[in-house]
Length: 128
Image (tube, rainbow, N blue to C red):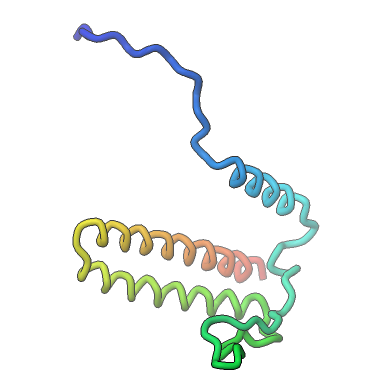
């Protein structure tokens, strides 16, 4: 079939991503490729890290406890992400229109984050 309208002229390709994101990705890849041993074995135990709400004297009500090893911390992160998936799945049914799309986007982001954490944990378990 013959086209009735010619293709538009080619323009110079524009950058689709943020240059700061590209720089961060390059830095991360260089750091990971420069490792002498697996990253998980290099991770130390957790330090105390306050988060969330504060009381009237600005003291944190919650904190990550010090001394948790990296593998146990990642297992807990995986569990938290699984819970977030299930909650957001339930909320999706309540949304309508743009809300539903935004919630589904969040669900997929959480699923991807959990898949990365689980893949890290599976890699450590199979390496043993």
